[in-house]
Image 1 (cartoon, helix red, strand yellow):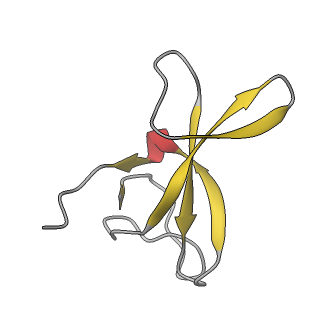
Image 2 (image 1 turned 135 degrees about the vertical axis):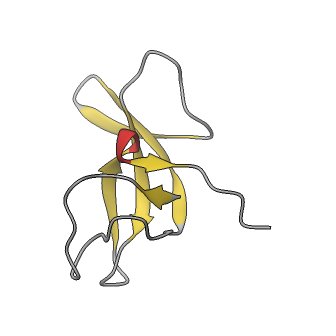
Length: 69
């Protein structure tokens, strides 16, 4: 997934960089729930490996899908 957000930091995300995504999550009630693909009408989050090689949740709206082939 390519980061298209406005904020850039060498310790988290850099604009234009492509990051590994380990899955999708959405909020159900007051909990995050793993889902297999984005769900229309839900606020989605991505499990992204960032610049620190750590996995964090980021809003899906800050990324665009890229073809890695």
